[in-house]
Amino acid sequence: MDAKKPYVVAILIQVISIGMFVVLKATFDQGFNTFVFTFYGQAAASVLLVPIAVSRERKSMCSMSFRLLFKLFLCALIGNTFAINTLNVALRFTSATVQSAISNSKPVSTLCLALLLRMEAVNLKSPYGVAKVTGVALCFAGVLVIAFFTGPAFSPVNHHRAFHTDHAYSATGHGTWIKGTFLKVFGDMAWSLWIVFQAALLKEYPNKMLVTVTQCVFSTFQSLVVAAVAERDMSRWKLGLDVSLLAIIYTGFLVTGVSNYLQVWCLEVKGPVFVAAWFPLCFVFTLFCSSSFLGEIVRLGSTLGGILLVGGLYSMLWAKSKETMIEPCSEVKTMFSAQDEKEETKPEENNNHRKMQEDEVSAYAVEQV
Image (cartoon, rainbow, N blue to C red; front, side):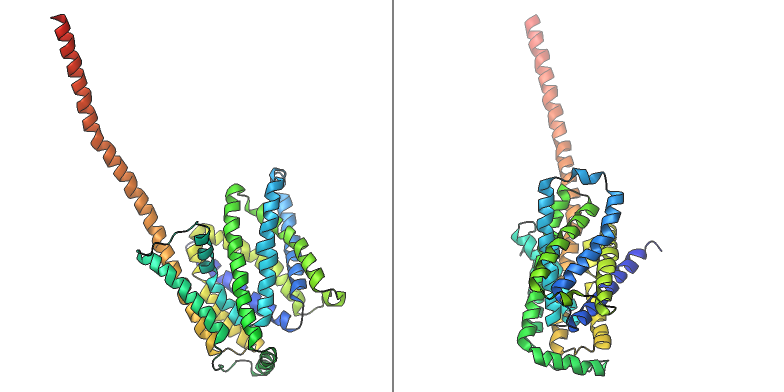
C-alpha cells in the first residue's frame, strides 16, 4: 500500500485541478469579476493557513529579516498576484480544456527560464539536449495551433449547455480567444519565474510553511488593491449561495491547502519528474468534464494543440529523467577514478621514500669512513 500511495496522491492532485478548472470557468461565465475572485481566493487560503503557521512556527517567525520579507513580497507579487490574476482572465477568455492543455507547458517554460538564468544547460550534441529542444518546439507549436487553428467541433455531451457556450464564443470572437491563449502562456511563464525564484529563496530560508503563508498573506493585500482598482462597483463584490462561493471555498481550501500539501509530499517522495508526468491526465479528464458539465464545444484545434503540448512535455521529462540517472553515475565514476589515481601514485611515493632512505644511509657510511 505504501508503494501505491504516491500514485494515488498524484491522481488526487489532478482530480482537484480538474475541479478547479471546471468550477472557475462556471463562475467566470456567470460574470463574476476575476480580480475580485483572486482576492477572495487568497483571503480564504490565508484564513486556512495562518492559524496553522502561528501554532507550529511561532518561534521561527522572529528569525525572518526585513530583507527576507521584501523578497517574499516580490515573490508573492509575481507568483500569486500577477500570475493568478492573469490566468483567471485567460480562463474567462477561453475554455477549461484550453487552460488545462496549456498547463502542460509549465515544466517547459520553467526550463526556458532556467536556461536564461544559467541555472540549466543544454548540450545539443547529446540526445537528451536535443530532446529538450524538441520538447520546447512541440509546446510552442501546440500553443500556436490552439490559438490560430479552430477546426471542426466535436459533438458535446451536454447539448443544452453547448448552445449557450457556442453562442458566447461567436459573440466574443476569435480575437478574444487568441488573447486568452497567450495570456495563459504569459501567466504560466510568470508562474515558472516564481518557481525559479522560490527555489533560490528556499535555499536561503528553508522553512516551507512560513514561506508559503507569508506569500499568501502578502498576496491577499496585493490582490485587494488590484481588485479595488479594477472593480469599483461594490455590488459586484457580494457573494451569494451560488457557484462563486463554491469556487472560492474550493480554490482556497482544496487547491491552496490540500493540493499544495499533497504536491509537496509527492515531490519529496518521488521527485518533480514524477509529479509533472501526470499533468496530461488533467487535460484528458478536463476535456470530458467541461463538455459534460459546462457544455463546452471541444474543437479539433484545441485537441491537436493539447496532443502537441503533451508530446513536448514528455520529451522534456524523458531527457531530464535520463540526465538525472547519468549524473550520479558520472559522480561515482569520477570518485573511483580519483581513488585509482591516488593508488597509482602510492608506489611511486614509496619508491622515492625508499631511495631517499638509501641515499641517507650511503652518506652516513661515507662520513664514517
